[in-house]
Length: 149
Image 1 (cartoon, rainbow, N blue to C red):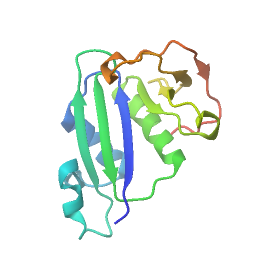
Image 2: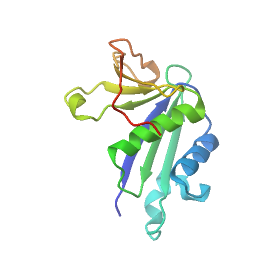
Image 3: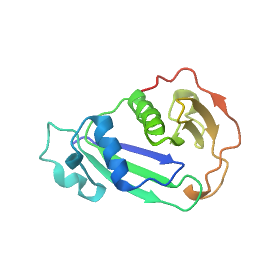
Image 4: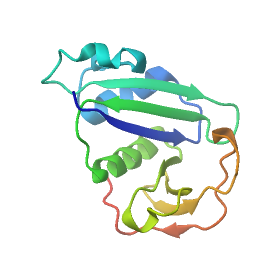
């Protein structure tokens, strides 16, 4: 079984049920196909449906919700960008993902920051700490080349 890994962070604290609702809507699947990440590989028998293994961590400061997903489908880079853009608008909060594009390949701390108004910025995590200390101050540059959902 093929498995893609998705990870994104939300500025606000968002509950797991709301994340499930969003993912089911975004991927156009039933909520029953969003399962615990630990049970993901038990679902190998489902071959025709997309299903998602989900873990949600909440924190008290910084980007307060970390979402980690396993998806049994090959997702293109543009699909991750569209997911982040859709999540920012859906939850009305900032979303951050690692910047995997070619120009950021050599920079481990490069990120893309999606805003609820649909705008996107390139930025660098200069917090030197855990995910609850994420602080983006090094630079902000609007990104025009990203297709929005």
